Image 1 (cartoon, rainbow, N blue to C red):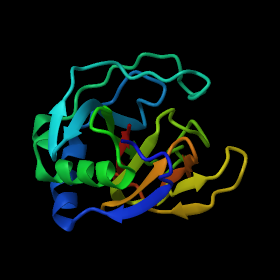
Image 2: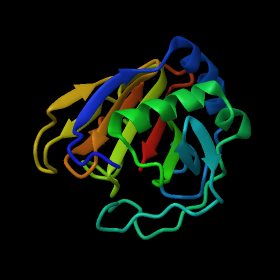
Image 3: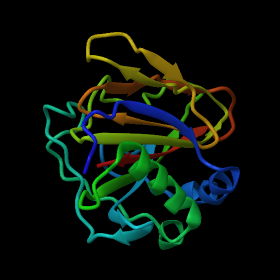
Length: 208
């Protein structure tokens, strides 16, 4: 059973898991969607039962416009997360934290976005162009695997859409937050490259 009283938990992936997940972000493709130039992405969904991950058939990702005013009501097709990532113990570790902390039901599909948000030295890039928002699920997990050559990009948690954050942190190196998406809102600060080298924030977002 899902725990409707669950609020929020913070956590940390193992150093080994972070190391094993990092390299795959270099293989993320651009897309033709509104955020495609600065948010590289793969997307898949799964069941997680008895510590075992089962990948579900490929589908488009879509959110209603009342939830996502940036690019809602658009059926977005992204490449699947790479099989080598899905089969890794590091990926399983991330699912285990998400499932156990929020008490996600066995029957609930878990959707996973793997994203690299690119920084620019010329302009601040919106890490969450939706602004302060909910994703329309029961539970949300944000796992930041790496930050390189950026300032900003802090993940923020809000009690209401119009309220300032009750929590803000520049997550890095496997730090994560799992929250009740019905009870809280979330956002992310804009980020900017601090030099002319490749700059990015690498994130897994899990929803159920």
